[in-house]
Length: 546
Figure 1 (tube, rainbow, N blue to C red):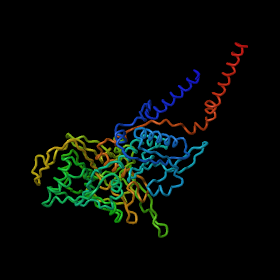
Figure 2 (figure 1 turned 135 degrees about the vertical axis):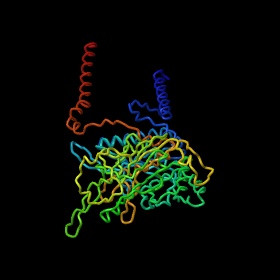
Figure 3 (figure 1 turned 180 degrees about the vertical axis):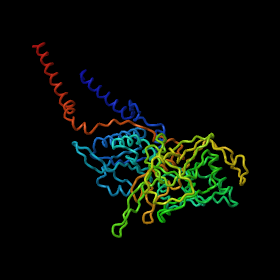
């Protein structure tokens, strides 16, 4: 065997070995300033726990403009990182064109996309969704979640930044073996099931849930506390009847013993339905008996209603054409559109949350950390109660100088070691579970009982994230689902929502105008330089050896 043949065989052997090593050991070096290609430890732990095949089908196959092509590429690269960690993850990109109806039935609603082509605007329909299957469980992932954006480019930027959270959250949903338990409290006039359906039906996809009646006014009070302690979270949605001391003690000890709570409370009786039926209503303070309990934890819900210039619209009859009433959507300042805290994962990048006759929250000084979640705009007005509110007020001219109360707090996250409200008081009943102070715990309080109340359309629940009359979209559902996830999250997955990327997009108008120049610079010029170099090289070579 000649020396040359041996060298060729050796080179082939080295290439085969390197190729095998490359398949066995995947390493990607992230040199980006925002570390966009670096997986969090939370995601790594979650993915490494997958012990049976997990299938991910992405419906982003097809021809897109440059922006959505970027989303397609980034999604593929991210999923490839997951597969490199665990080869039990199987990925498949599909074109949705032949199965649109089936996808819509699964809840994958299409998005309308504005495409710039040859300097002209056109519309296209895409399905930015993925479906994850693990055993008998299935869930869907939105690759283009709704958020507050100024442009399509900004929406894409936020979508790419959210990829890790969306997929990690979905994988945890289908892979978790033991579901955490949520108690939906009843017995004090809380919202009925049909008005919480939109919110709670989404919660049941990830958690175990059951109705729980606070019958602590009976002799079974100690047993009620023991039963409630089996749950991880209690949701208190718009109670209308006063809590007894025993019921408050059950809630207090549930919290001090580590139970999480999500409070949606009205301290003023004001009902939009009665206002629509009669044209006016009396808004008056409502005593739920919870003031001392919440005061101990560090907040107070006031009995004033907040009006906000930045508000949702409601339909109002403005006249008749023939016998047909004509409606117009007008701003109703008693329905403020609350803005989320952009620095907190619960409220980052969600749409404004619609509140109805919301009250102001005051925070008090104690050892508990208070993180604002929902706040009003700066142009607000506090309305004292009792007060008669008439629908005719919607026609009154807005005097901006009257809205001078500043930003108001509507929802707050409390975290820390909670003191029991009964620490230095007589206990309503004896229980071996009594504790004077909790370990680290957290709760969320919202000063509007209607924040999770969905409308009804033909006696059926309507989506909480949309108004059935005006078709306005709101962030209520996303906010509440994020709140539940945050309270029950022991792994830190929700913190992935704080990941921010800076995607540098090209100006479509400028690229269209200058495309010939850049095409010449990138395609023709290198060929011209190569030819010139070849001619010069040939000339000097001929001169040297001729």
